[in-house]
Amino acid sequence: MIKVAIVDDHQLFRQGLAVILSAKENIQVVGKYESAIALLNQIDDLDVDLVLMDIDMPEMDGITATVEVLAIRPNVKVVILSMHLNSIKIQEAISAKVSGYLLKTSSDVEVANAIETVMNGKDYFSQEAQQELIESYRKKEDPNYSELTKREIDILRLVCQELNSQEIADKLFISKHTAETHRRNLLSKIDCKNSVGLVKFAMDNGYI
Amino acid sequence: MIKVAIVDDHQLFRQGLAVILSAKENIQVVGKYESAIALLNQIDDLDVDLVLMDIDMPEMDGITATVEVLAIRPNVKVVILSMHLNSIKIQEAISAKVSGYLLKTSSDVEVANAIETVMNGKDYFSQEAQQELIESYRKKEDPNYSELTKREIDILRLVCQELNSQEIADKLFISKHTAETHRRNLLSKIDCKNSVGLVKFAMDNGYI
DNA sequence: CTAAATATACTCAAAAGTAGGTATTTATAC
DNA sequence: GTATAAATACCTACTTTTGAGTATATTTAG
Image (tube, rainbow over all chains, first blue to last red; front, side, top):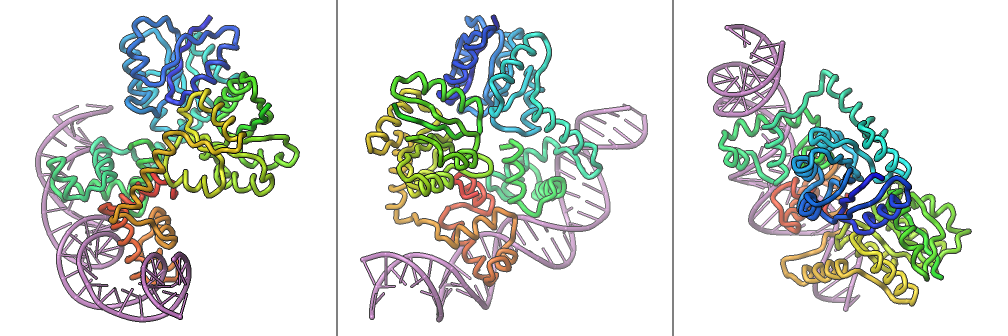
């Protein structure tokens, strides 16, 4: 019997999924949590093999939560169950050492498969997640493509807070010229026309 | 027995909710659809009293779908079941003649209550939805607040497509000056500093 | 019909963003 | 240790946005 916990802020989803999974003969739902905090508060005393974790939740996102969970209970498996598909989230999830990544559009059969696969010591990433990763690797091989640097991500986030280059410069203790250079490099890398494109990119790719 | 159909693109949610609702003694789930199109294709032959409708779905959003459903089957009740809470969506839903608006964070008990209430000829809007509406009415009474006009919404959407004022002007066959005026009025009404603020507002309020 | 709201168009001026450079210092990787 | 990448900073030039006005035609609501 695989002991599974569910973390999701949507009660209907949480409860529905629990019912569906409990119907599987080898799965037992031992916990349902409406937030990562709620799970972390009980993780010490919880007899659990695998956590199904949503990403978008108030208070603490599922990826941060995964890091916390694995720090306390390194033997517990974490599988992401999110509605969003973007390569940055998937990569962040992998960095956080999740064992799988599923979409909410998945079927109950796929979720059960994923749980079994992960408990057998393998990873399970949904077809869509794999595809997304492959495409992001393809992009990286494109000579016109280059990853954003840490500093560029800083600038991107501040642009998205409606700050102008001078304000960004003040905030980061750099020259206005530097902020403008970073901004221009962003426009070039992301291949968009103006700051509006930057915000949309940031939103689509989970930077904000 | 109340005959309910569920429209939601997340299979796990759809299926889970169906199980939960089927357990209620007075509710029968007569259909599960992964898209509004799928529902509309079968609506003629479907013996259904009430549709639980998600908003954010590919192909056709739940509000457009509601209008279509009610055009064909005016006696069917539609209740929105969405994860998002914003006054514009709620108002659009009301305009589309929905009978209720629930959040996915609701409990199964609340959903069942809502279904019963609506089948008794009343409307059911969740506490959060009501609160959101009240706050939007409060805003309207604020002398500094004013609703966006249709034209302003046009301009807002084009700004979000990375167009500058000249390009917007060309697209709408108006003068560049006019486009600039609209843009400035938007900044003033939305109370933000630049186009970045406009995009975020547009996203937060479901304009794009 | 009339008043109010909306959409339209313009001017002038200041501020910010965009586009093309160049160049130095600081990390990082091989 | 030396390439390489990243972060830093500056210059010139041009475009766009923003701010603060004014003004008129067109719609809409009472």
